Length: 119
Image (cartoon, rainbow, N blue to C red; front, side, top):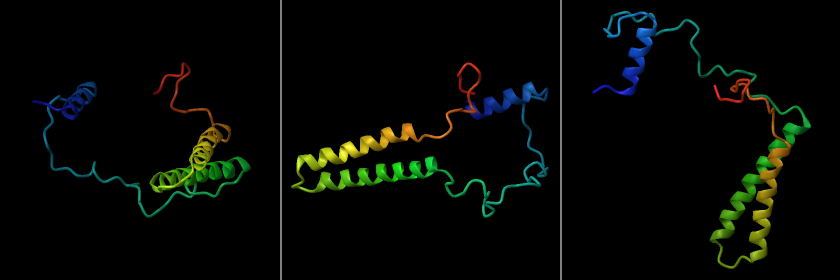
């Protein structure tokens, strides 16, 4: 019985014009790449401070969502919380989620083609 990975590898080999059967070899030079990624070397573009007002608002909205979610979990386990406090916490959570639509990032998805189909 063949698994999906073996079938995909066989299909890839047939497309490349190679033999469909895979024979193990003693070569290891394909496994080690010269420009391999070092996990300790971080890309400075990945971790940068927010620069604009929209980015700061996005951080504040996420903090609002997380805090209201935690407050809802706490109020769920307390026995004598008034209903108005629970409704207020739920409303703040909903406002945070709606706020994400206002301060969302770039709406251009690079993984979509011209028809809107995911690549």
